Length: 210
Image (cartoon, rainbow, N blue to C red; front, top):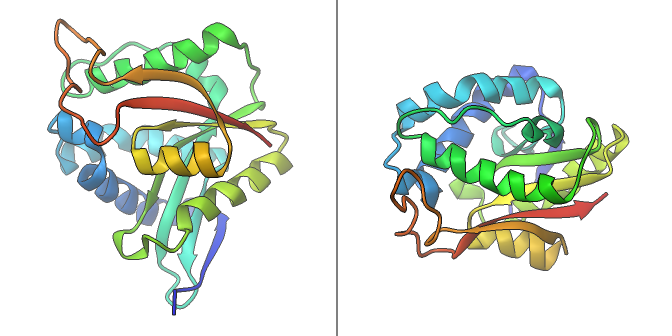
Protein backbone atom coordinates (compact mmCIF):
# COMPACT_ATOMS: atom_id res chain seq x y z
CA UNK A 1 0.00 0.00 0.00
CA UNK A 2 1.27 3.47 -0.90
CA UNK A 3 2.19 5.78 1.94
CA UNK A 4 -0.35 8.41 2.93
CA UNK A 5 0.87 11.99 3.04
CA UNK A 6 -0.45 15.46 3.73
CA UNK A 7 0.44 18.73 2.00
CA UNK A 8 0.61 21.82 4.23
CA UNK A 9 2.21 25.29 4.22
CA UNK A 10 5.89 25.09 5.15
CA UNK A 11 6.47 26.89 8.45
CA UNK A 12 9.77 28.32 9.67
CA UNK A 13 10.19 25.61 12.33
CA UNK A 14 10.55 23.04 9.52
CA UNK A 15 13.13 25.13 7.66
CA UNK A 16 16.16 22.99 8.52
CA UNK A 17 14.50 19.72 7.54
CA UNK A 18 13.29 21.19 4.26
CA UNK A 19 16.71 22.70 3.57
CA UNK A 20 18.50 19.39 4.12
CA UNK A 21 16.06 17.52 1.88
CA UNK A 22 16.07 20.12 -0.89
CA UNK A 23 19.84 20.45 -1.08
CA UNK A 24 20.43 16.68 -0.89
CA UNK A 25 18.01 15.99 -3.73
CA UNK A 26 19.20 18.86 -5.91
CA UNK A 27 22.86 17.89 -5.68
CA UNK A 28 22.10 14.24 -6.40
CA UNK A 29 19.51 14.78 -9.11
CA UNK A 30 20.00 18.17 -10.76
CA UNK A 31 21.69 17.94 -14.14
CA UNK A 32 22.55 21.65 -13.89
CA UNK A 33 24.48 21.25 -10.65
CA UNK A 34 26.24 18.11 -11.87
CA UNK A 35 27.30 19.89 -15.04
CA UNK A 36 28.96 22.60 -12.95
CA UNK A 37 30.48 20.07 -10.49
CA UNK A 38 28.91 21.81 -7.49
CA UNK A 39 29.34 19.96 -4.19
CA UNK A 40 26.83 19.70 -1.36
CA UNK A 41 28.67 21.84 1.21
CA UNK A 42 29.34 24.73 -1.17
CA UNK A 43 25.78 24.59 -2.50
CA UNK A 44 24.36 24.78 1.02
CA UNK A 45 26.56 27.76 1.90
CA UNK A 46 25.49 29.55 -1.28
CA UNK A 47 21.78 28.77 -1.02
CA UNK A 48 21.06 29.21 2.69
CA UNK A 49 20.38 33.01 2.80
CA UNK A 50 17.93 33.03 -0.11
CA UNK A 51 16.30 29.78 1.06
CA UNK A 52 15.57 31.28 4.47
CA UNK A 53 14.18 34.41 2.86
CA UNK A 54 11.80 32.41 0.68
CA UNK A 55 10.56 30.32 3.61
CA UNK A 56 9.80 33.47 5.61
CA UNK A 57 7.63 34.78 2.76
CA UNK A 58 5.11 32.09 3.79
CA UNK A 59 4.36 30.87 0.25
CA UNK A 60 6.06 27.45 0.29
CA UNK A 61 4.42 24.07 0.91
CA UNK A 62 5.68 20.64 1.96
CA UNK A 63 4.53 17.04 1.96
CA UNK A 64 4.57 15.18 5.28
CA UNK A 65 4.40 11.43 5.82
CA UNK A 66 1.21 10.83 7.82
CA UNK A 67 2.77 8.06 9.89
CA UNK A 68 6.16 9.55 10.79
CA UNK A 69 5.68 13.29 10.25
CA UNK A 70 8.81 13.27 8.07
CA UNK A 71 9.09 15.81 5.25
CA UNK A 72 9.04 13.80 2.03
CA UNK A 73 8.79 16.72 -0.38
CA UNK A 74 8.82 20.49 -0.53
CA UNK A 75 8.05 23.21 -3.03
CA UNK A 76 9.99 26.36 -2.17
CA UNK A 77 8.17 29.38 -3.50
CA UNK A 78 8.71 33.14 -3.80
CA UNK A 79 6.99 36.18 -5.26
CA UNK A 80 8.16 36.22 -8.89
CA UNK A 81 8.23 40.01 -8.84
CA UNK A 82 11.57 39.75 -6.99
CA UNK A 83 13.05 38.13 -10.11
CA UNK A 84 12.21 41.17 -12.23
CA UNK A 85 15.04 43.05 -10.52
CA UNK A 86 18.27 41.94 -12.15
CA UNK A 87 21.04 41.10 -9.71
CA UNK A 88 24.77 40.94 -10.28
CA UNK A 89 26.00 37.57 -11.55
CA UNK A 90 28.29 36.06 -8.90
CA UNK A 91 31.79 34.84 -9.64
CA UNK A 92 32.83 31.20 -9.47
CA UNK A 93 30.93 27.98 -10.04
CA UNK A 94 27.47 29.47 -9.60
CA UNK A 95 27.90 32.20 -12.21
CA UNK A 96 26.67 30.16 -15.23
CA UNK A 97 23.62 28.94 -13.31
CA UNK A 98 22.66 32.45 -12.23
CA UNK A 99 23.16 33.76 -15.76
CA UNK A 100 21.00 30.95 -17.17
CA UNK A 101 18.05 31.65 -14.88
CA UNK A 102 18.39 35.40 -15.41
CA UNK A 103 18.21 34.88 -19.17
CA UNK A 104 15.06 32.82 -18.72
CA UNK A 105 13.45 35.49 -16.53
CA UNK A 106 14.45 38.26 -18.94
CA UNK A 107 12.56 36.50 -21.73
CA UNK A 108 9.43 36.43 -19.57
CA UNK A 109 9.67 40.01 -18.30
CA UNK A 110 10.33 41.36 -21.80
CA UNK A 111 6.83 40.21 -22.74
CA UNK A 112 4.92 40.79 -19.52
CA UNK A 113 5.13 43.33 -16.71
CA UNK A 114 3.95 42.08 -13.33
CA UNK A 115 3.31 43.57 -9.90
CA UNK A 116 4.23 42.32 -6.45
CA UNK A 117 1.65 39.84 -5.18
CA UNK A 118 0.56 38.77 -8.66
CA UNK A 119 2.72 35.80 -9.76
CA UNK A 120 4.55 33.21 -7.65
CA UNK A 121 7.66 31.31 -8.68
CA UNK A 122 7.83 27.64 -7.65
CA UNK A 123 11.60 27.86 -7.32
CA UNK A 124 12.64 24.46 -5.90
CA UNK A 125 10.48 21.38 -6.06
CA UNK A 126 11.88 18.16 -4.59
CA UNK A 127 10.63 14.76 -3.50
CA UNK A 128 12.56 12.35 -1.28
CA UNK A 129 13.86 9.37 -3.30
CA UNK A 130 11.83 6.84 -1.29
CA UNK A 131 8.62 8.81 -1.99
CA UNK A 132 8.95 8.94 -5.78
CA UNK A 133 6.05 7.53 -7.76
CA UNK A 134 3.45 8.49 -5.16
CA UNK A 135 2.20 11.61 -6.91
CA UNK A 136 3.80 13.88 -4.30
CA UNK A 137 5.12 16.52 -6.70
CA UNK A 138 1.87 16.86 -8.62
CA UNK A 139 -0.13 17.11 -5.38
CA UNK A 140 2.24 19.77 -4.01
CA UNK A 141 1.74 21.82 -7.17
CA UNK A 142 -2.04 21.56 -6.78
CA UNK A 143 -2.03 22.50 -3.10
CA UNK A 144 0.43 25.33 -3.73
CA UNK A 145 -2.02 26.83 -6.21
CA UNK A 146 -4.81 26.75 -3.62
CA UNK A 147 -2.54 28.24 -0.95
CA UNK A 148 -1.21 31.20 -2.94
CA UNK A 149 -4.52 31.94 -4.64
CA UNK A 150 -6.00 32.50 -1.20
CA UNK A 151 -3.23 35.06 -0.63
CA UNK A 152 -4.22 36.99 -3.76
CA UNK A 153 -1.86 35.62 -6.40
CA UNK A 154 -3.33 34.97 -9.86
CA UNK A 155 -0.63 32.92 -11.61
CA UNK A 156 2.24 30.52 -10.93
CA UNK A 157 5.46 30.02 -12.87
CA UNK A 158 8.13 27.36 -12.55
CA UNK A 159 11.67 27.02 -13.83
CA UNK A 160 11.73 23.41 -15.02
CA UNK A 161 15.08 21.84 -15.86
CA UNK A 162 14.19 18.14 -16.02
CA UNK A 163 12.08 16.19 -18.49
CA UNK A 164 10.06 14.69 -15.62
CA UNK A 165 8.91 17.98 -14.11
CA UNK A 166 8.35 19.47 -17.56
CA UNK A 167 6.04 16.56 -18.36
CA UNK A 168 4.03 16.97 -15.15
CA UNK A 169 3.63 20.74 -15.37
CA UNK A 170 3.17 21.20 -19.12
CA UNK A 171 1.46 17.98 -20.16
CA UNK A 172 -0.53 17.05 -17.04
CA UNK A 173 -1.23 20.47 -15.51
CA UNK A 174 -1.55 22.28 -18.84
CA UNK A 175 0.77 25.19 -18.07
CA UNK A 176 2.12 27.22 -21.00
CA UNK A 177 5.79 27.61 -21.86
CA UNK A 178 6.63 31.32 -21.56
CA UNK A 179 10.42 31.17 -21.93
CA UNK A 180 13.01 28.58 -22.94
CA UNK A 181 16.79 28.32 -23.11
CA UNK A 182 18.48 25.40 -24.85
CA UNK A 183 21.39 23.89 -22.95
CA UNK A 184 23.47 23.20 -26.06
CA UNK A 185 23.42 26.79 -27.28
CA UNK A 186 23.61 28.72 -24.00
CA UNK A 187 26.92 30.54 -23.96
CA UNK A 188 28.62 31.94 -20.88
CA UNK A 189 32.05 33.53 -20.68
CA UNK A 190 33.08 32.04 -24.01
CA UNK A 191 31.98 28.49 -23.21
CA UNK A 192 28.92 26.25 -23.16
CA UNK A 193 28.66 25.01 -19.56
CA UNK A 194 25.47 22.96 -20.01
CA UNK A 195 26.13 21.43 -23.44
CA UNK A 196 26.80 17.98 -21.94
CA UNK A 197 23.24 17.72 -20.55
CA UNK A 198 21.28 15.14 -22.54
CA UNK A 199 18.45 14.25 -20.09
CA UNK A 200 16.41 17.20 -21.38
CA UNK A 201 16.96 19.63 -24.24
CA UNK A 202 16.32 22.86 -22.40
CA UNK A 203 15.20 24.65 -19.28
CA UNK A 204 11.77 26.22 -19.54
CA UNK A 205 9.66 28.72 -17.65
CA UNK A 206 6.04 27.53 -17.62
CA UNK A 207 3.06 29.53 -16.36
CA UNK A 208 -0.40 28.55 -15.23
CA UNK A 209 -3.34 30.66 -14.11
CA UNK A 210 -4.82 30.10 -10.65
